[in-house]
Image 1 (cartoon, rainbow, N blue to C red):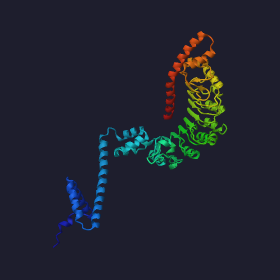
Image 2: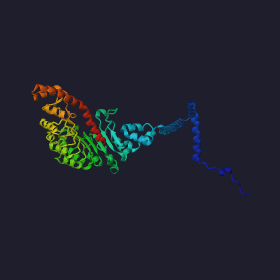
Image 3: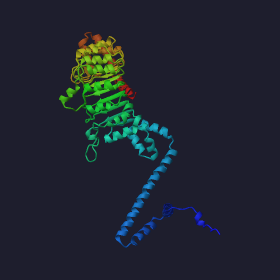
Length: 466
C-alpha cells in the first residue's frame, strides 16, 4: 500500500531568512504599538541590569544604539519620501513647469529650493535649472563651479563668476572662503568640450588667480559665445583680443576692462599695450556682429579707435574709458552711423580741441543716432560740473538741435554756464535770451540724464540677455 503523504510536504517552504523577516516584522509592530515610553525605558533598564558582566551590558547597549540609529534613518528617509509624495500631489505645478520656474531663479535660490524636500530636489536635478550659473556670491570655490557645470551638462547657457572682496569672503575663522583658481573653468573642456560648446555668455570679474593661459584655454572651448565680459583679470590685452577674434566669431557684446587690474604698474602698462594694429584689425575682420564694445584701460591709439568705429557697422555702444593714449582726433570723422552711446570717461589725453570738433561734427549731422555722450574727465575737461574750455554756444546749439541728447558731465550749475556764455556773447539782450534758453536746455538735459543713462544701461543688459 502506498505511503500516505504528510500534509507538511505540500506546505510552502519558508527560508530561514524569511522566517527571521516575519519575526522582525512582528517584533517591530509590537514595539511600535507601545504608546507608553516609560514601559520601554523600564524594560530596557531591566534587561541591562539582568546582565551581570560589564561587557555584556555594554554590548547590549551598543546594539540598542545601533538599532535605534537604523530606525531613525529609515524613519527620516520614508518621512522625506512621504513628504515628497504629499508635496507632489498638493503642489499646484507639474514637474515640467516647476523645472521651468527653477530655471528662472538665480543659482543660490535653486540650491536653497532643492534642500527643502525630495520633490524639489528631484526637480532641481534637471540640467535646465543650472543653465544660467550666477555665482557672484561669497564662499565659492573650484568644487562649487565644477559641480554646477556638471549639473548643467549640455544645457549650459551662461556663467558669471565674481570673486568678492577679501573683507566679504572671510569665514568665521577669518580664512578666505572664496577661492577661484586658474582652473575654475577647467570642466568646460571635459567630454570633448560638450559643456563649453553651448555656452553663450561668460562673465569673469576680478578672478586674481586666473592668468592669460587659463583664460585662453577656457575660451578655446567656447565657440558659441555671444556675450563676453573680462574685468579685472591679469591678462594680456593683445593676445586676448586676437584669441577672441579667432575663436569667438559669433561675439556680439565684448567688455574688456583692465582698469581694475591690481597688477604692478610696469607689467600692467606692458599688458595694456596692443601689438601694433593687428589685434584691432583681426577683431574687426573676424567679429563683424559686435554691437557693444568696451575696451577700458587699454592703450588705444586714435588710429585703432577710428578703425574700430569704422569697421563695426552694427556697433551701437562703445566705451573707451580710462584710455591713456588717444587724443580724440578720431571723433570728428563721424564714423559709426549706428552708434547710440559713446563713453570716454577719464581719458587722460583727450584734448579740448578735439571735443570742440566733435561738437561741430554732431551739429553737422554726423553720429546721427548718438543720444548719450560721456566725455567727463576729473583731471582735465570736466571740472566743477561743467566742460572747461568748450564753447557754451556749441553746447547750447547741440541741445537745441537734439533735445533728447544727454551730454555728460551735465550743466546743472547755471551760474557756471552763464559765466561761460558771457565770454561768448556781447549783447545784453542776447545774453538774457540765451540765459533763458540755456536754463531750459539745462533743465531738459538734466531731466533726460537719468532716463538716458538708465536707457543705456538697460540697452547693455538687453544685449547681454540676447
